[in-house]
Image (cartoon, rainbow, N blue to C red; front, side, top):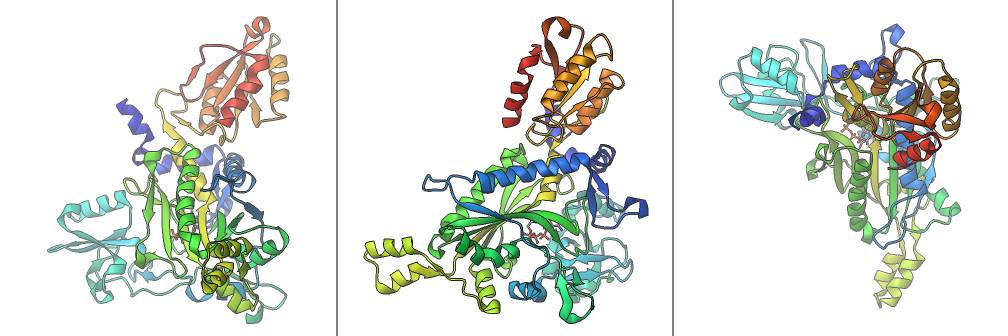
Length: 520
Ligand code: ATP
């Protein structure tokens, strides 16, 4: 049992090996690899694309097609959207991204490296100076401090944002051994820009969206006017976002091009606290439904001083990534955005964003409320609760979570995806390529492929075929052997135990068996 923990605790999983497996098995490739790659960009290979689509489809299913049951026992209402990546640039002035979407950066004059100020932690040791290191990077800290003969327990740790810039001369930057090489922080806008049209002038300047959320706010009125939605309701969208991150790192965790799954929940201001709480817990439940171990997930409420300019309350859902363990890193943010965005777009576009809430008006009248109270309840700019998650970050979480070293297997590792998310649901093997076995196997394959992503494999030894499927994370292998000709049944090799199930499975029950496993 002690071994179980070694294999499920992310702290013991090697990112290097995971990245190598992702490349080897076609989950994720570095973008433009033949040209030496391009920092912060990744390509999703055949298995990675399938995994990503499976997560996206589950999110869409649970958000738009079959959204959760609300606090009143009725299903909540959420509609879908697919808005343009490039919008009128005024959008980003109104949202605050042109003026404010920047991270304070510090440069190291010695190594020319650039860091986000809030990503550096500093260990202050009385007689040995101040040692800076990238936040959460345990290996790095250990190596650097060992070299300097300093122990983490010798001093106190502070984030660089909490240290006065006049003190920077004492700090030894992460990648050098000399003190005083960090510059004062400078703002750096994260939006990629381009030009729409033939002329590259300031009037033609456009931005690639840094979040999908604004496309939703721009269409809020269209949806109220066309879809017969009633408050409260949500609009959901999945799509690419772009941020010119200064320090893309940790594989696909922080990329410059990534995918988001965002939902804006519009509600009456008086009800916003209730909905914030509802979505916070719903989102955690959803992450658990992906098969992520509860022990590796947690909430982290934002302190008042770290709230974004638009946000009244915010909580992150965090995951214990191998590179943050024993600490956690962000996976999703659930933010109470108040009426900030719609008010901003109302001001900048001169389009009214107020909602007339007939039901609330009636309820206020029936409750004998004052005239002012009735007016406030019946006309308002809605508040917004936003669960915003990264789809590509979810792919990373499932890759980390699934990666299970097992020295007893030929591959030395298997990917323990829940069947629902596994890129390949089952493999079909004729034990040998003769004696009537390929014919039965091919027939089964042709039946199953109508409904599921399955693979037929007749090449090499059965052990090698299992090893390939272990690395791809295929939960079941059905083998047609000599006995099949007599009993019309197959052996089922179960990925997680690495063993054949005790009972042979009749050919006509394979479909139902698979359907039940995928539905779990
Ligand atoms: P951070 O503080 O780490 O830069 P953020 O708080 O700015 O992230 P949000 O703007 O809340 O992130 O974006 C919502 C979600 O989008 C994040 O929880 C994350 O899953 C995903 N995300 C944001 N930036 C990136 C990125 N550069 N690469 C991959 N996913 C990202």
